Length: 222
Image 1 (cartoon, rainbow, N blue to C red):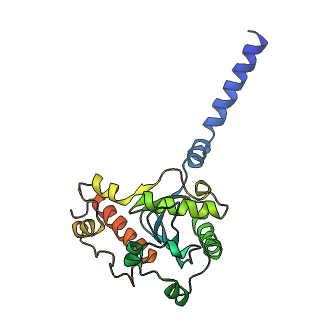
Image 2: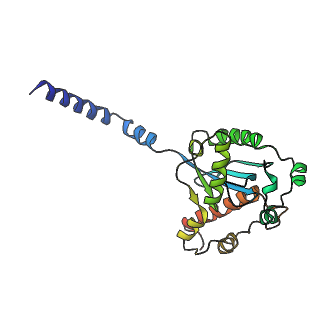
Image 3: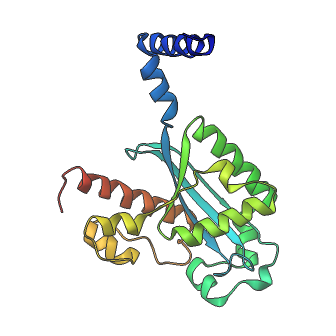
């Protein structure tokens, strides 16, 4: 046997001995599997285009995969360009510069600082999956918000996202609107009152939908 062959044989034997040690395999598997948790997010904005319009509030409820709450966050934000606010958006969320001042809205920088602190404290070592009812919309606004303030969406959240209507669809609920899904699940719909409709009510609605879908997937009533 050549010296090179003996070296390879020694390495193979060493690896085999290590893998047979108690607990080594379990530890390796544990390290390979991140602890996932969900960031249930909802935002209100001044319009539909994330390249033009801005977030005016954000609501978040962080939960583990079984729907147990880890923490929640809500804050109102003063947009840098309030003149871009569309009438349709204001009819949904009741935004006005004066009302936002009265309600204690803060600058984008202050809001992100507070949200960043919440995120890191609540997420801890978990891998957070961005989850929303209209995930493409919410993700676009949050991603641009983070980017404008020098942060990266990928540094905060997993590269895959979860869409609640898609989860419902997979369980046979062939609906996409929040009202119809709420009816199908037997839960209260989110408020449509513009003076009460916020990212906070949206995040709470997301949580109610997620928990009800979990019940159904675990054999609950359909």
